[in-house]
Image 1: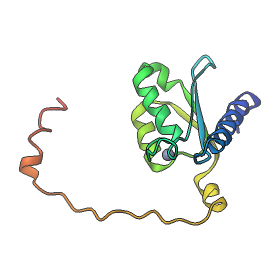
Image 2: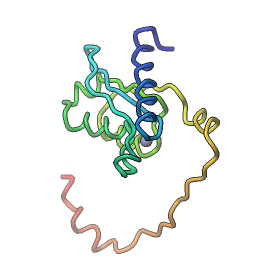
Image 3: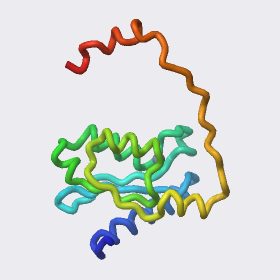
Image 4: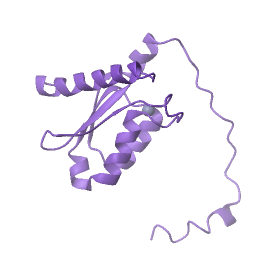
Length: 142
Ligand SMILES: [Zn+2]
């Protein structure tokens, strides 16, 4: 359970979600709060207005954290977000070094509110070409 201090940040995320919707985008918003309790960045979903499927607020903030925060600060930074991050954003957040996520709606709760949708997984095939494909990778990681 989060306290009143953190609830205020989560309410701001919900407010950002409403702003995203008012601006013609899906209703999602997020913010980063640093170790000193300072709001470091805020984002709204802009996937419709910018015609870019990757512009979820959580992904934008993960990119911001990886680019702008040192690892110690990132690890001590919390993302407050109006909804539990999707798989795309979760992957980016894991790579960003951010230390903590606090969300309002769960993914499951979101699914119960909106009309049902079934994401289509593409057909994937592999692995192939091991001898060739390993050449640019060999030695890269030390
Ligand atoms: Zn997402």
